[in-house]
Image (tube, rainbow, N blue to C red):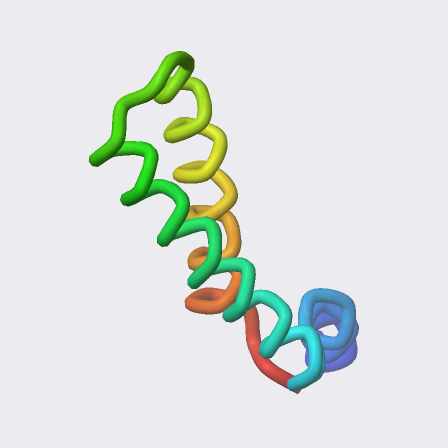
Length: 68
């Protein structure tokens, strides 16, 4: 049982360099989401959804997957 858990953690863990990249993605796309929400140019809803989903995915990876 212990070896199965270690394989799981090894497969889903990531290094600190990936952590930095995910943090930058989270910051940039979160900021773009806020800008799209404020400006509301043509097609702003689609852009806000895309930016929001990318931000959410990067946050969930940072919050719930273990760091190596």
